[in-house]
Image (tube, rainbow, N blue to C red):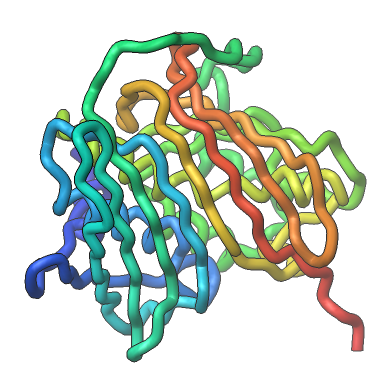
Amino acid sequence: MSEALQSLLDLLDLERIEEDIYRGRSRSAVVPRVFGGQVAAQAMVAAGRTVPEDRHAHSLHAYFLRPGDPGAPIVYNVDRLRDGRSFTTRRVVAVQHGKPIFTLSASFQTYEEGLDHQAPMPPAPDPATLPTGEERLRSYPHLPADTVERFLETRPAVDLRYVDDPPYGDFGTPREPHSQVWFRTNGKLADDPLLHVVLATYVSDMTLLDSVLLAHGRGGWAVGDVVGASLDHAMWFHRPFRADEWLLYDQQSPSASGGRGLGQARIYTQDGRLAVSVVQEGVVRVPREH
């Protein structure tokens, strides 16, 4: 396991303060607030630690209420809403400085047989043929060196490879609102299913709104032509997967209006199984000229 991946796992490993109360550390993101994927992942850790091991996460629904302060710990309070025969439901509130910054509802289910079908995996190149994230970032001369380094400092635990240029790599002209990214952790993970769900949750917030930017030829915060933040986030976990094996994150944006943009995505295993569905809406604003 790489040192960077171990550092990320340590970040997601919460301290138990009291029954159903946990505390997590934070670290700086590429913007001056806590990375939303970190808060969502830590909240899933808190929820999962109150659930029997034979019940696996099948969905989460979350709202980002306030920007997180990377210099302060986050306290996660878990409410045990229901423990049924097949389903378990938890609600988590993340608190900083006495105020909620994030809420999450998560549902867990015992395994059972049932109807089975899925949307087919879209075509995508083999991830081994694509440049690494570092190679791609360093190939863009228009990006300031400090911006590139900030990106690289926040993503060393994840091997994330764009199929085409990301918004900040090729902007100015609108493109199809569709983006594909292959990702996996930089090292093997334990077999705990919750851990793989948590890592996928963490990564899912990195690129989902890219397709919104592509539709309008915007490069994003890296080039300063939009400002934004995640508003809400939902995920459905359909089939088992491993976050340390290649996963295709196929993303698109059906709509942007009212200062908000919507991203929809599906995550497939490399052998074509639909593992996760994701939907996120975020604030996407064009800076006002003074």
